Length: 197
Length: 197
DNA sequence: CAGGCATTGTAACAACTGTTTGTTAGGACC
DNA sequence: GGTCCTAACAAACAGTTGTTACAATGCCTG
Image 1 (spheres, rainbow over the protein chains, first blue to last red):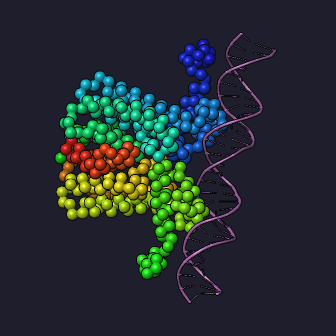
Image 2 (image 1 turned 90 degrees about the horizontal axis):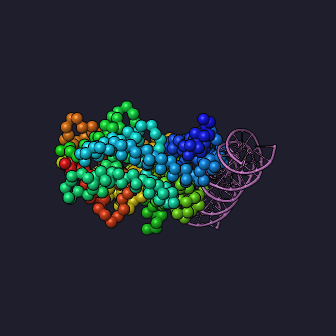
């Protein structure tokens, strides 16, 4: 079986390989320097091609950004859904979700961390596209928190933002060596549930 | 008394006014679009001068960024110190600090919010300068949390990062109209102390 | 009124930006 | 064997970037 027949059977073009390589290079650099400080030439160089050639795979820089962002959402969504699948207790579900969230962020994939970057300062047209993707991930946590047995006077929206704030902020300080990502995620949920006093 | 004599008596040059105007314009734009997407020409235009003229007041863009960042730290540090001054109970001190933190962030000054932006993606030379400034503010919260009466098995460093994560992340979602900044800050501390279950 | 200093404007610099164009090599298909 | 598609290169585009050197302005002091 030639490469090409296999490619056709799986519904892939050969270029999908290079496309993935470009996205990986882009995600890597976006994480390191941010969107603005990463030029198309930087990405192309890391993928071993010239800047102009990228426009065969992506019609604009914005589209490339959105593609990496969406891939990040896909990966982390899958991880969280798998981690909570079959778990009954609402607090345990949230704990497992936080652990999966953190494990995915720091598990070596460069895509999911992009979801934790603050996008409130990106250009409006790009921002609205990213917000839409992010919201569809946040909804997972909305549902998890909605299911918690809580007093009526607790603002569940604020609770979600508090937890996601703690979790996402970790991307700005986490370094390997101390507590593991899973321990950190579990800790944040435990404090929120049990308190300290 | 002419403007100039007053200026001299206070040990100020006339340029200090324009310098402040430039910093205000810069902080405004930095908040809106970020450092990279804000050009020196944008800042100069907003302050009513030309790009080249700014180099009389600031010797580089990086210096201007650092100056606005430092001004933000000065303002929010002062607010937190005043808010906790004289308060005895450790938890109440932390609560008042969180309230002052939030009130300063959303109280209309464009400088302090800059401290809450993730700087892990900025250029290394700039980043190290900003980190130093930020750490000196974070130390305030380190001390506040150090004074809490907590069980020994609680990681206080992680606790501080959790709270600052919740608080700082609010800059990416807060809009006037819902709960006030003070309510949000107090809520985060209360959940951390009392828990939910 | 003259001189000097503080402050701004003017104009240009080299480097870099995202993107487009024309072209080319190689393989697949009829 | 001719034709088309894929994928990439090479070179240029117009615009923007931070920064600089120099000239002009205007106020304050002597």
